[in-house]
Image (tube, rainbow, N blue to C red; front, side, top):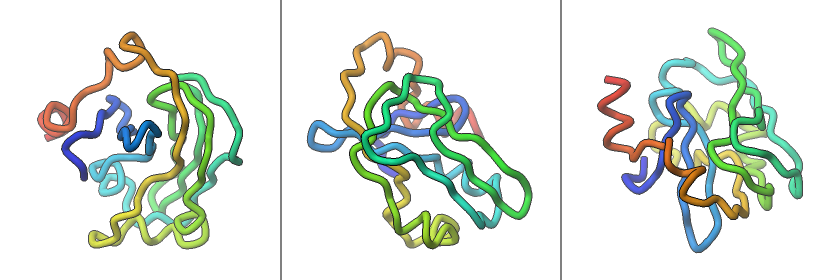
Length: 124
């Protein structure tokens, strides 16, 4: 995982790249879920507020909702993991992001996110 990502206490992350943001779940969340067998992601151009459910994941252990770490509009969906959710379980697979968004997130929205090192300390 990228050290520059910001994480939520509910195990989502956001990573700014070239003015856009990648959103997904942390490696810790993936490990806790176990073998992921299904993922449902939103359509492009869908807008979400911070804290809204934007995805559903099913594993052999449980089904989980995934929440938006910041507000934004979906500009790209990772169809590869929709079609092959088991890729999330592959340690070497690097494209684990769920969606890419455009966001006007301000410091207020970002204030309660943890940097990755603080997040790792919290979950260990």
